[in-house]
Image (cartoon, rainbow, N blue to C red):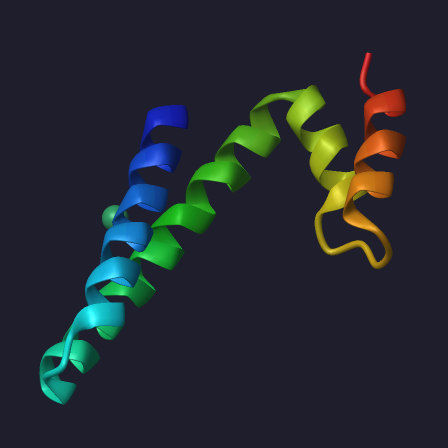
Length: 82
Ligand SMILES: [Fe+2]
C-alpha cells in the first residue's frame, strides 16, 4: 500500500508537469480531469495506512488539518509517538 501511495503521488506529479507545459486547452482539460482521479486514488491509500498503524495515525492527527506552524505541530507530534 505504501508503494501504491508513492505511485499515486507520482501520477499526480506527472500530470502536474504535463499540464504546466501543455498549450492545447482541450488536452490540458483532459489531463486535469485525469489528475482529479489520481487525487482520489491517492487519498484512499493514506486512509488505509492510517487505519492500520498507530504511529502514522498519531502523526497525522497532530499535523494534518491543524492550524498553526507545521514544523511546530510536527515537533508536538513527535513527542506523542512512542
Ligand atoms: Fe491512480
